[in-house]
Amino acid sequence: MKRRRFGATGVDLPVVGQGTWNIPERGAGVKEAQRAIRRGIELGMVHLDTAEMYGAGRVEELVGEAIRGFARERLFIVTKVLPSNASYRGTLAAAERSLERLGCDYVDCYLLHWPGSHPLEETMRALETLVEQGKTRFAGVSNFETREMIEAASYLRKVPLACNQVLYHLCERGVEHSLIPSARERGIAVVAYTPFGRGSFLRSGSGRQACEAVARKHGATVRQVALAFLTRESGLFAIPKAARVEHVEENAEAGELELDHDDIAQVDEAFPRGDPGPLATL
Ligand code: NAP
Image (cartoon, rainbow, N blue to C red):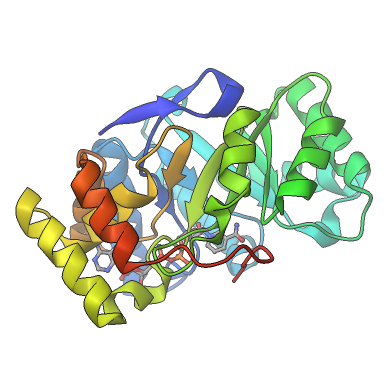
């Protein structure tokens, strides 16, 4: 699994990690989803993304159970505070609850899930307090426009803004216009969420054909091509969610796939970047 520098944190992370939104929260699917997470970790997908929002905390508990037995320092656990909780005190309290559910003393990166109504400066100050308290190693944001991302970074005095987690997939490439270049310039990692775009790229006839052609050339799958494309440059990461072991195994292999100039041009042509516009979110 290819690893690269996670922004200005000094930490190297696998280019493909694991999302956990909508993993089954009860029934037989829970064990399979936890097996999938563990298999992913064994294959090097140690960047685990969750949030207090997912299953109203239930997903953090399931992730906490799934990671038991792995050396904590091998993992990179990311969770997020809801904007409605993101006052200074609210953020500190939300982080405690997340740590409790995860069964961890610290997370690796704590994000503001999306911009909200609490003053951003206050939330970022709380994230820095959590870093000082050793409850998170790094601070980040999600669903932040370029301008908001720069503003968030400006409020951090002691740690760099580690990442901005944004919607990015083959049919939604708007972040390539200004967000990705601005993030790279500032040493902020960009993490692609919903990298399969709910399967939209597979429904585009000519786009799918282009991915299939590239996939055939490399003995890969179209989803692996999509993930390799999204992580084709420095500073880019993707966190597909897979609650099935065979899906995790396929996604992990994408972390080895290196697209050449022609492959990238082919996918680029099949899925035009489009015009700049407001940041797309789910
Ligand atoms: P996604 O990863 O693009 O797609 C997930 C779907 O793809 C699931 O149905 C999954 O099936 C399927 N899948 C995964 N790997 C596959 C494979 N190799 N072959 C066939 N199907 C495969 O969508 P997402 O869950 O929306 O996004 C990923 C993660 O990003 C989330 O889980 C979450 O952690 C994060 N996220 C963050 C935000 C935010 O606001 N920050 C918003 C959305 C998502 P199975 O589950 O059945 O394996």
